[in-house]
Image 1 (cartoon, rainbow, N blue to C red):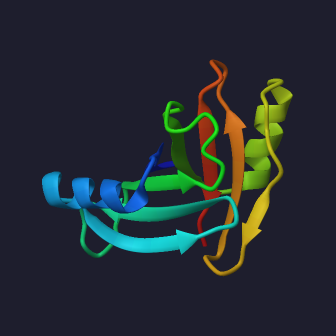
Image 2 (spheres, one colour; image 1 turned 30 degrees about the vertical axis):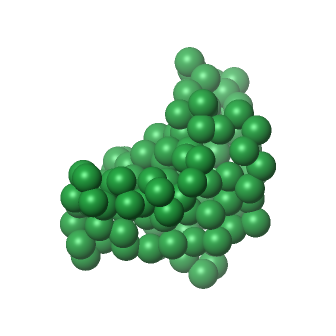
Image 3 (cartoon, rainbow, N blue to C red; image 1 turned 90 degrees about the vertical axis):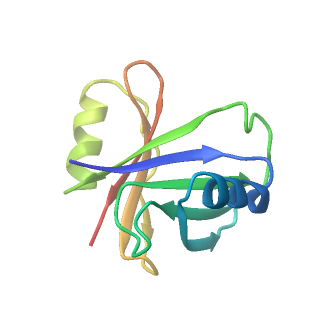
Length: 122
């Protein structure tokens, strides 16, 4: 398992990117526009190495940014982890394939209800 980083819900993506890059010295390495959110990926490594912070401005801001976000973890096999989570009776979403990024993603919760994003990298 590899710690990829954390995803943080924000009110205004541009304002938050400015804060994290100008004040904290992180580097913006990518922006994504998804149906449900706009997100910017930041890293201490200008080449984009892990760990990263993903800032997400939700299209439907209900509950955000009061909700912290989620821990993002890299896994070798999403399906294997999904089976293990379900065997423990934990909440698991549908697996999402993102061919443009070569990843498979599933959202789940840990035993305390904290949000997890599990990413199978290429």
